[in-house]
Image 1 (cartoon, rainbow, N blue to C red):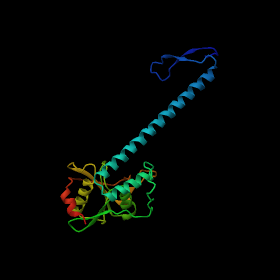
Image 2 (spheres, rainbow, N blue to C red):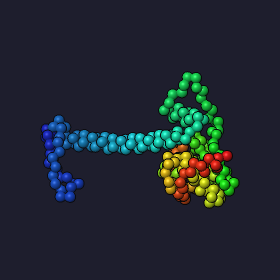
Image 3 (cartoon, rainbow, N blue to C red):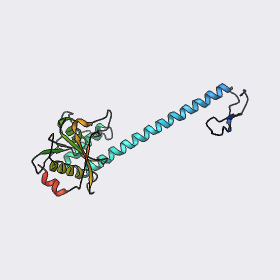
Image 4 (cartoon, rainbow, N blue to C red):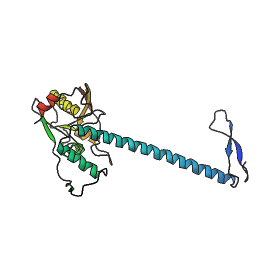
Length: 231
């Protein structure tokens, strides 16, 4: 239908239920085929732009979750924990290393806090991402129990038992809730599962994991109880 020199063309819109006609603007210096190719090029560029924007939104959301987690960790951090957080931010490219600051060796084990339930079972808590990664990915055994607040930034907790009693589960969950963003809340959901069901996705931020086959407990953080369980 299109001839070189046409500035527009009336065409049926096959995406419209009523098959209405629409007016399509044309470049009079191009043939019909060249106009079609130009529109298709614009369409592909727009489609790719949408994809890039969605990727950037997801990346930004991931960064927000990451910094929310860091903020939560800073609220209960000791000076040692803060130094590990600073080292992590340097490794991730958010901070520059001070000239006099030496790079820490990667094989240095983070110090993790130890607790013991009232029934005598030990469990351990990561207070920052380095400690979380260590306690979950290197320290814990495959059938030991892992806990984390459900959909809430918080610490990784590992019970040094394959089949802990209910009291130990509740106390470990209470510690997990206390060292989370929900510290001031009540009836906090805490998931627990075996370590074998916890995985870190490729390229994920430090401390980020996915897990499955979990059971959820609801506990209320209790600072006095947490302090009494600390070894």
